[in-house]
Image: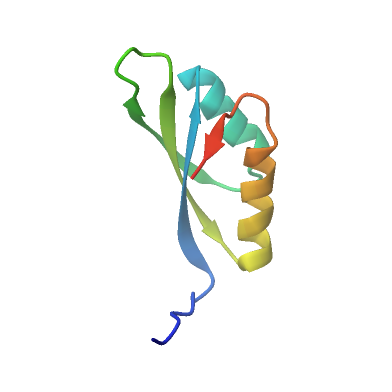
Length: 81
């Protein structure tokens, strides 16, 4: 099977999950030094966890990986998808 190649620049989507919806939004704005679209997503059934969708245009694989790493290492964010 042929591997699909990503054509850069492209729009990339991340979903971040944490316990405070507003802190997630602020973390995304602080950690991504580009214009982003940040929209609320689902929350857990008991309301403990919230998720936020992030849409950003990335120029290359290196930038895409750097954004993921920055989000992954922030203490306000529990998971990055």
